[in-house]
Image (tube, rainbow, N blue to C red; front, side, top):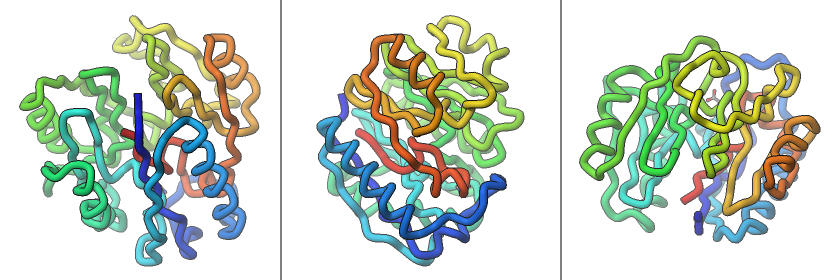
Length: 253
Ligand code: GLY
């Protein structure tokens, strides 16, 4: 179970966020409204939410998930793979130290975006992606091993982050789509397959038995409910425009 979440308010330079999506420019005011509703949903799932202020220096800084891995045993700040995002890890450290006095750190030349990390109990699947390099995975593996946790590397082909196409919903249930469907690493999960026309919804978030899903993907939402979960649908269209998924917008621990 999670008890806390951390979010950072979207900044006024949101439109400058990195993106490969061709969905238009995010509307700042609309993004603020969507962020308000996102926070309310976290609170509805019994999380205490720490809300960090916007930082106009870093357009992608609302995507706090990429900056840290928080486990029951330890916390690690990352070294994001995109040049413009690297300072975001340092930016979050002070807030994390309130909860984790001793923070580990991924350092150059290792790079790691925590959007590439999927936690399954004490085991972590980590995407070798355009953002996360082998040195990043090796550093993470060493830190987690010290705390009795293990890592499986997932070689990636197309997707931005591992959790762009995979979300673990606990109880061995896995939302899965795209390039991961053919990967035998995931054969032993109960797979809830996300259809290609709803692939954005493969990034959904389990929180204390409820699953947050992006609004507008009815087949995926129905499949998650069919698996026994309550869902909350959230409109995050303005974040999607800069390649942000639901999970990217918070750290949960
Ligand atoms: N815009 C989110 C990212 O590229 O990391």
